[in-house]
Length: 128
Image 1 (tube, rainbow, N blue to C red):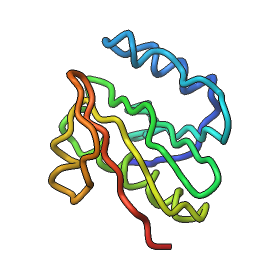
Image 2 (spheres, rainbow, N blue to C red):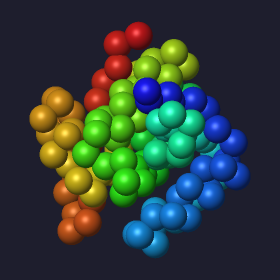
Image 3 (tube, one colour):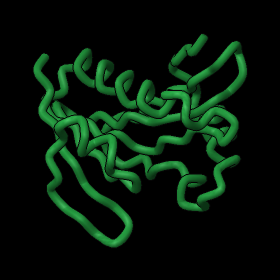
Image 4 (cartoon, rainbow, N blue to C red):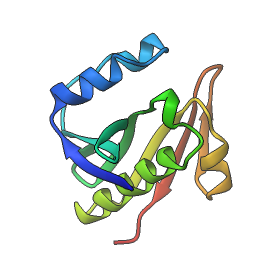
């Protein structure tokens, strides 16, 4: 059974350090707003981690990592949907994401606003 819950930044950093991609290992810079970390657990075992950044009425889906053993089981999508739910609960009106793998966002109606060699930036309005 998959459980997604808020976790401390230290635990998130430990999970992220297991990423193959060095860029994913870094924590986002603190800056303004608030970072909320979520862990995905299957039968109590760490399966993934993701971050939601909230500033005023805007949010951004930050780091998202599903550990190799758990990929292909819908955990990444569950982490996306959970963060959208939390953003709505915080009154956010707009969510942005820089996606390295854009296919899920394209299939689910997000608006592409910028495309670079490595990232695709999407936005989505939230109706609270």
